[in-house]
Image (cartoon, rainbow, N blue to C red; front, side, top):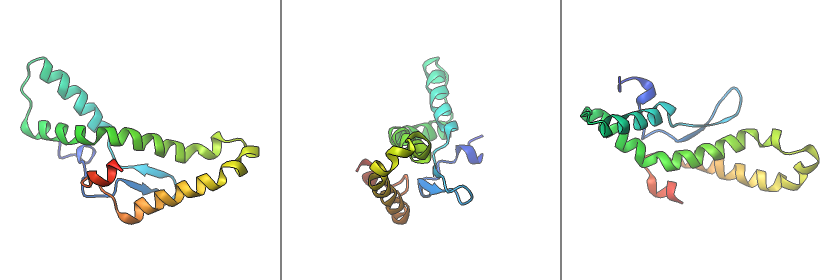
Length: 122
């Protein structure tokens, strides 16, 4: 079960990437890890002993969860800001949007991974 690609945390891979076909920004953090953390916690509270691989995956996933939530919000905003901002207001936020995009590109160029929590904290 944990050998499936959906449960692979891929800690050494970039945490953000641009989808080649659509150009949308993607966060590399599986929603299935969140479900595993929730279900694992519930099973533990019910007295079930969890496999050590599952426990380890839950611990690692929990370590990065708060970063993933924040980054997911940023990614969703980045991917949809063009639709949210009225056309008449776009010139007002264009400079900020371009600066934001530079930061995203910088993150991509630095190859920031989930293993590098010091960078994530900043």
